[in-house]
Image (cartoon, rainbow, N blue to C red; front, side):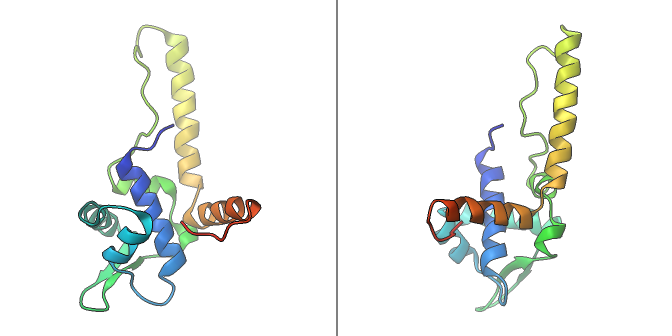
Length: 141
């Protein structure tokens, strides 16, 4: 599986909100700088995430974005769907020509979609934190 840039940035932005938005909204500029995401592109992504009720926004000098719900209630499937990335697995080249390949593909796709639904932001955060801690690094998304 290879995430395209939009999918990758959306997950990075959501993880940034898990880490940094505990007490106040986080600006697009702050997230963009920390995550090396072009601010204009990030703004589009955050608007999609807001339309999907995954984040809330507030205006003004102290405005920005926060998670709409707890990180354990937001799945990777919801994030990818919100930004228009419902099928990160490539489709087989010749679906109808080989029934065995098609059957295997359908099973793999089904398992993959279930996995995306079952992985939430909280788990992803702890996985990333553990991975960096095992390498002696301080966790920064």
